[in-house]
Amino acid sequence: MKVAITNRQRRHPIGTRRLRKVAERILDALGYPDSELSVVITGDLGIRHVNRDYLGKDRPTNVISFAMGEGEFGGINPEVLGDVIISADTAAREAEEGEVPFWSRLCFLLLHGILHITGYDHERSGEAEARRMEAREREIFALIEREGLV
Image 1 (cartoon, rainbow, N blue to C red):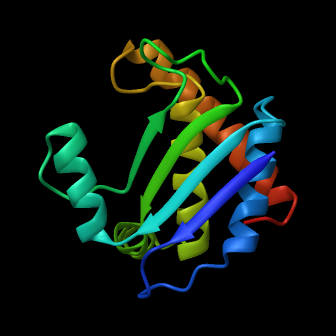
Image 2 (cartoon, rainbow, N blue to C red; image 1 turned 180 degrees about the horizontal axis):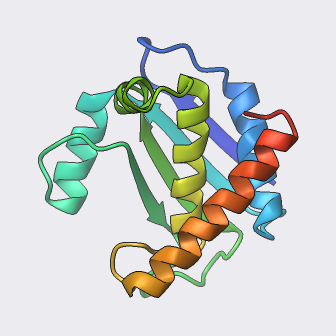
Image 3 (cartoon, rainbow, N blue to C red; image 1 turned 60 degrees about the vertical axis):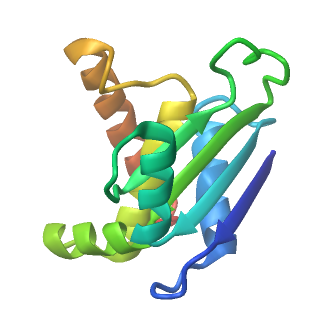
């Protein structure tokens, strides 16, 4: 398993080794132990540019995922899952609003993004799929909490 993490912001301290362990555990729990994943931590400006340029929404968001297994050439290298981009600024705001630790919110957003690139969808596939994704989020988040990763 290869997880590449790039931290492109400086406002919020991120333990990239620790975050890599969280990503690896999530991938293992989902049955993707031999896969590759790229994670980018950025600020609101960075994710706003990605959101605008690739999704046509000119605003920051918390997490964006790009699955490499989708599209015409998606099956070329099935071990390469894709990219998860997280705004540390938005994660920090959401953590404060939800009265949860920043690290907890960051890990949850990582999990949410990984679920998207492994085929889960709460936006376009209807209520049943949204419930299935939420149940999987709760299950895996509880697992990484029990293991002391969050």
